[in-house]
Image 1 (cartoon, rainbow, N blue to C red):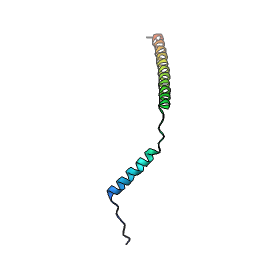
Image 2: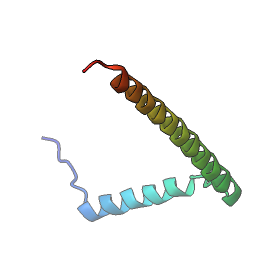
Image 3: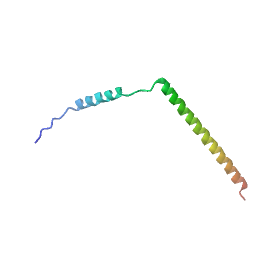
Image 4: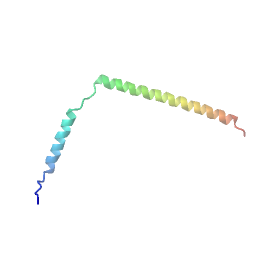
Length: 73
């Protein structure tokens, strides 16, 4: 029988945390100007999508009004 050396739970935990910290140090964080630019792009896309959805909603509502007005009783 092969004797397996049992490692301490705390030793595994500390090793895991050390590796996590090492990986966090490798991250390249965006600059303030990049973040501001990306935020502006997101707001612009949301605004454009909102306007398109509003226009589609108004158009379909107007079409429904025409259909309801013309339908025979």
